[in-house]
Length: 287
Image (tube, rainbow, N blue to C red):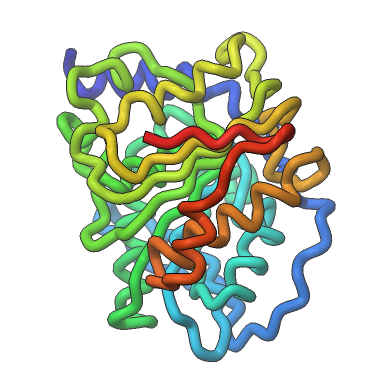
């Protein structure tokens, strides 16, 4: 199938992801000492200007590229961004062209944002390399952004070149679900050679698109074996990352230990993460 047709299929399926655009907006940001907190306007190779929120502590130990959900913005993930900065990460979070916070003349629909999201991650990675040279890099995304983060880790590379060189790990909070003609391609995720953590829930549905929460696990099951983890949270919905549902008190420490260990090389965090086992609320799957 032609790449353009695959992208059309992908974006049609992801059109339902617009609903969680209010993610974490009413969550109180963590109180952290930030040496940098600004929006940087960066020219992209395609002629656009990408607005990138950069939040960093005085002495960052790593970089985290953050991709927001469909029609949303980095502001909607501010609590997550501030928490990551408080853990020593310099965060670079681009505002993708599907964001409703952009002026109309700068916006695209979700379909048009598929390609620009991939480019945005490359631009954000280049900015981070310039501002924070030599630091290890990870990626985190929510919903549509989780696919963007996985592409940055080498996902879908048979037809979509979007891997960020040197990326050490990726965190996916939920997913857009399986996308016919894209996620079911032979070897669709074979080039992902870094650790991946997927967080989903037993109530993680997107009406009209993801009817069975288990469909999100197509990404976990499709990855080649080796340092892949899925956390399946009982009763968690597609808005779990907002932090208002039971289970986040268990998932957040695991996700942080994943980033500390796999990106920053923290051996104590690695031991804790590797030893984590299922509880009555959170099922831990590994492969």
